Each structure stands twice: as C-alpha cells, then as structure tokens.
Image 1 (cartoon, rainbow, N blue to C red):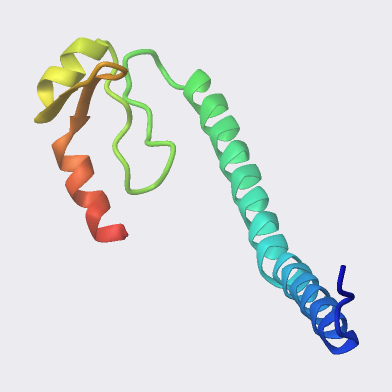
Image 2 (image 1 turned 180 degrees about the vertical axis):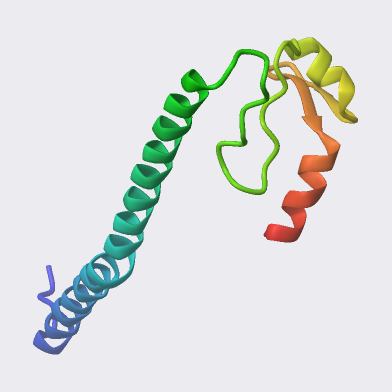
Length: 114
C-alpha cells in the first residue's frame, strides 16, 4: 500500500480545521444570536398572551377579545374544521401514501416567500 504524500495530509488537515472554524463561526455569530432573538420574541408573546388572558377574564362576557398578535384577526369561535376547509379554495391530493388537500391561497402566497 502506498503512503500518502505529506503535503496531501497537510492539505486535508487544513481543510478539516478550516471547515470546523467556519461551522463554529456560523454557530457563534449567526445561529446563536438568531436563536436568542427567537426565544426573546416567544417570551414576549407568551407574556402578552398572559396579559390578554387576564384582561379577557376581567371583561364582561360577550365582548370580542383582541387579536393575540397585532395585525391578525382573532380565530373564529365555533367554526368546525370541516367548515373551515370548505370555506377556502383547496387543491385535493390523493396518492397511495397520502390523502388530503392544500389551501390554494396559502400555497400561492408561500411561493412569493421562497
């Protein structure tokens, strides 16, 4: 069996070390701060929902609660799953391993985000 050239071994080791440095740098400088921001956002949203829950308990019955997230509509109360599915245009999917439907409006809007 032929031994490897020392230059090739050095290049391989250098490639492995640099790859690990890139991955570590990505984790420390990009993914870590993003994860902390997401956790802070979730904590703030949880606190907001708790405050709204307390405010909802204090209001009279029969009043409409505010949306949990500004700019979004509150979920419709008393609408069944089947009624919600029938209310939106959907694309039926039926394969040997999968059966269901996809909301056309939501799928079309996701195309613009990709």
